[in-house]
Amino acid sequence: MRRIIGGLIQCANPLNDETKPVEQIKAAALERHLQLIEEAARLGVQVLSLQEIFNGPYFCPSQDPRWYASAEAVPGPTTERLAAVAKQHRMVIVVPLYERAAPGVYYNTAAVIDADGTYLGKYRKNHIPHVGGFWEKFFFKPGNLGYPIFNTRYARVGVYICYDRHFPEGARLLGLAGAEVVFNPSATVEGISKYLWKLEQPAHAVANGFFMGCINRIGVEPPWNIGRFYGNSYFCDPRGQTLAEGSGDKDEVVVAELDLDMIDEVRNLWQFYRDRRPETYGALTQLLP
Image (cartoon, rainbow, N blue to C red; front, top):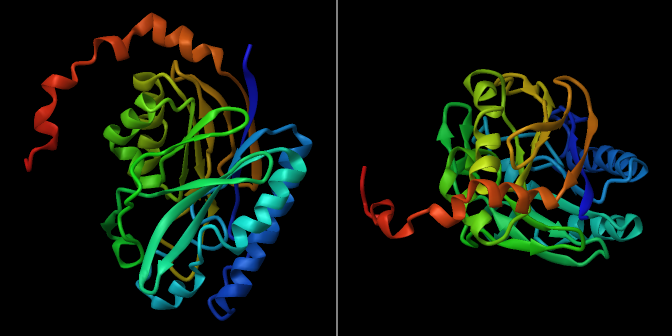
């Protein structure tokens, strides 16, 4: 039997003060998350994901270049700090960060650190929104690393980031590559997305026969005040059933036991991978509207 303990951290940005230096805002967020990682360790979590751009606010409602200063190399100082924590607790950690790849080149990225502190690699968000309140193309280039799978000590892990979840194609590629658990760190506010929050990701889990860990931050972040980040982070299984869910208004670690043997059981029942017809899908890659 292959059972693991998964964890998700949802957290409010602890220092919503635009008058403070960017590095001070980042330091406060990192410190709060270190406290929650310690809680996750006490709860026995083996595979943990943090939220989108975990060490600061979701600054994309602005188009303010000051936030370029919050980007850093990946791997870099934050991944090194968390690698030591991962090794201490024998915990896999998915670390979503604002990445500076080169002068003027930035990505919305998630690093994956194995339970021995080894940096395994990174995923760069592929689908970048640019609509009211979410001006992400000002801050991020589209990802260029495809949809990698990370062979961690406990499970084969994939990552999707926030807006990616609206696109089934990448989720399918993660499944085909062997993902057992896919994490979707997000920053999403109340409105139409809340309805989709519990619709799309269980559908990915069912269509692809994997577990999903879906993370959303909480609270309101001035000065932008684009809405309330509603939390409700959750795990769902390959049947689309919710295993554990967080609240809508508090910092917490959401924990669930994931029975990885269920993946074979569900795939043998539904046989979506046997019955798919990729030779009929060629139009997907054509330049259609």
